Length: 118
Image: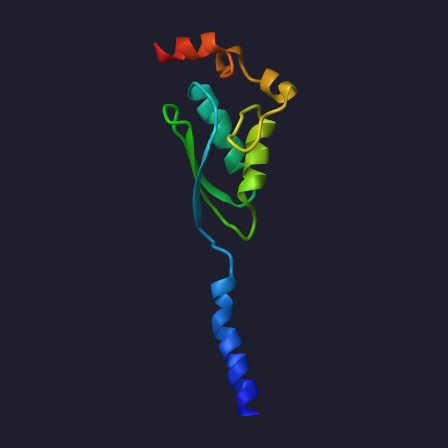
C-alpha cells in the first residue's frame, strides 16, 4: 500500500513538468515592408486566441510573440498571419490573400521593396 501511495505522490509531483507553458515566447519571420504591414501582422497575431503579445519589427521582419501554449500554437498563429496576406518562412499566403493587401504593402514586388528602403 505504501508503494502505491508513493507512486501516486511521485506522479502528482511530476505532472506539472508536463504542463504546457502559459507564457511561451517565440519569434517567427514574417514578410512585409511598412507600418501598415506592421499593424496588419500584429493585429492578426493578437486576434489569435491565446496570443498575449505580438510585436513585428519592420527592419528585421521578426515577429516576437508571447502566447499561451494551452490555447494556441505557432502553426495556428502562422495561419492567422497568412490569412491576412503575409508570408512566413514556413507558410506562404495565397495569391488571393496577398492581393488583398494595400498596393504599398506588396512586399513580393521588388519595386515596392526598393521604394521602402529609401
